[in-house]
Length: 83
Image (cartoon, rainbow, N blue to C red; front, side, top):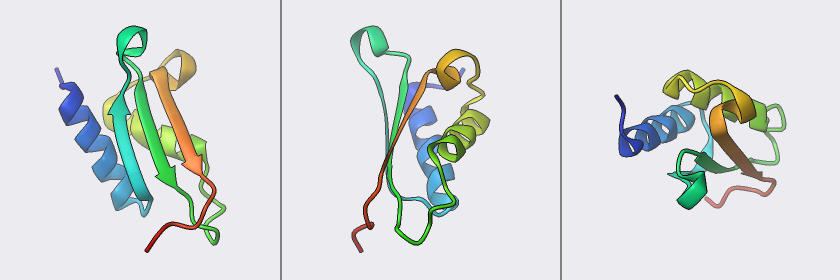
């Protein structure tokens, strides 16, 4: 069974490899303990990527599925990534 730390690192590596910037991945606490939280920046010239793409990559890496995208929360900041 994969640990939370391993899951976090695997998702971050997969998103970074796909070209996402400013990626932060973590898990919830308390009643949201099982939720995977993903934050990333979206560059202005890269509108083709959506939160669904991020969610799909995370699901592929983790094997999560089911309601609420397998308990995955995605937040993409619509701002130019800091260089």
